[in-house]
Image (cartoon, rainbow, N blue to C red; front, side, top):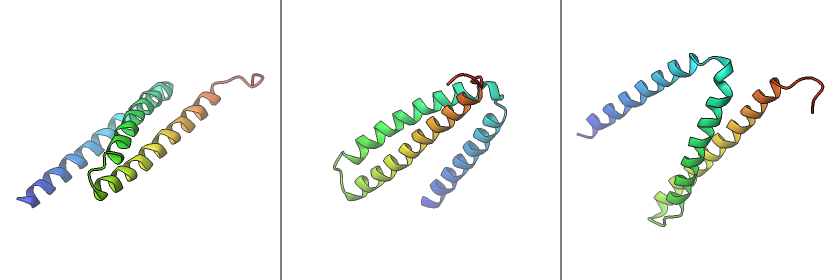
Length: 97
């Protein structure tokens, strides 16, 4: 029974990764910055959820996994903002600060 659930989860993960890659690769460069801003907002929500899980006090495994989720979500949010800032700087004129 557990092997069936694992295979189904692996199937869903593989399908989601393939579909996500196909969707993101078709996004034109002009829409990249608004898309990144939206994904930063989603990452912020997942960061808040990870903080709730980490601080729920339901056991050491829950706290450890919550802390791992907090670290991953923080890296995702910070990296998203760095990339968004870099993309916005590409559209600035040369003479403006």
